[in-house]
Image 1 (cartoon, rainbow, N blue to C red):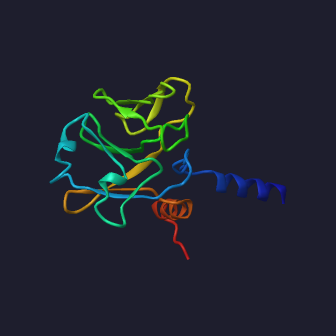
Image 2 (image 1 turned 135 degrees about the vertical axis):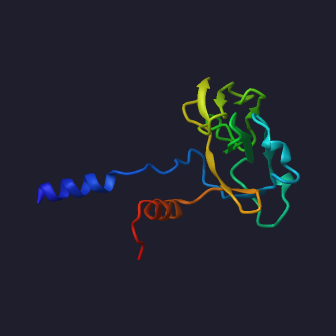
Length: 165
């Protein structure tokens, strides 16, 4: 019985770790028009910030403090929440730099945004920037989204080939 429980615990605990939400949950759903208004995001190291002021549709959502969309050196788009996780305040947002990094003006934490991880490079912070998914759309645009934990679990199950019933 103990062996069966141990095996069950090991099987359940293995697998891909879902994205960790370091900030209070806030929905994110915003379309980035790469063939129009945001065409400059095709350039490596380009970045744009999106907040409530950029709302185009009533359904647009900008995460906790706003979105930072960054083009990596290879042209891949990455998205982060603008909130510094060390400060944990909607009013303290990181400021992107042209070198693929973003700095918090309050605590001085420096985050690397270039490779899609938002990892802390220096400063008092202990967590990475909150990441969001960038989903390519058929028309050449993309949508920035965050999935709640239930949706994350369903997506991981689908990707693992498990059938949900």
